[in-house]
Length: 370
Image (cartoon, rainbow, N blue to C red; front, side, top):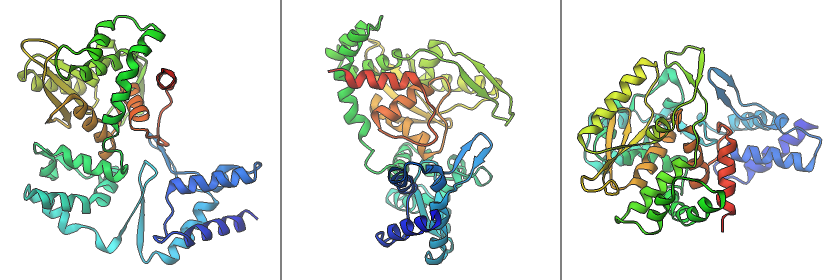
């Protein structure tokens, strides 16, 4: 009976889709529909998505998935399905791997319009390589365009492929967030940040209201225990609690001069080597000489490459998108902050998300503020 039901569901769904492909999101929805109609049925009987935790892999399974694969195998004409970690299904023809475009990208920085064209064409191939450690494609050593001054725009292109329509989400939602901060601080009696709230309401320097809001955001989180695993692949885990300063500096590191940008990054790398860790993407903001409220430069550091951007929010936007576009883990010390940004500002949920009660509580508190 379940096999017949799965056959009817998949057949009907494929019949109404021109591309003859079903996303993992749709398969999740279909299994939930079956559960709604037949309450005694188990969703996982029909669809259980791919999951990877450390070295433990749970393959995609379920009756809907099996039926979908069997029917697709008959009609897809030698096409391959690539499932990303974010429930997005990509397809490309095995016989049409973008070899020429990849070779061109490995040897050229210009013209930029051609870089963009080839970057878009090779997205599926490049992203798939990031999902397989044994085939890991070294962006920053092999693709020189991403190392250039505007290489971060290529990260934006890849993020747009993963999450269409989310490119400006942070900027629009951050304005609403700023309007809610004063009442949030007053209602829940957060202490020691009244001066930052004043800067949000009446900034002493043009544009500092956004910086003050980012500083308030960090103050809303307390350090929590984090699990540290060695980058060498050791299965032994250690737990520790970062200081509030370490939490802040893993997110945004404030310095007083441009010279300190490279110094900070070198120190972070030395510390990471001692701990057998890696340095995840983070930001450095340079304060002006006349006032700490006058932020003169904004940098995003990704894989030891320093990208200068035009504003603090732009830095947060690029830094966040790099985690997804490059398939990277959030920084351990500020992981809860990044999950808040993901869920509150970008409205993104993935099956790999870790649960943080404080993140959910804060989102609830903000949403209830008038």
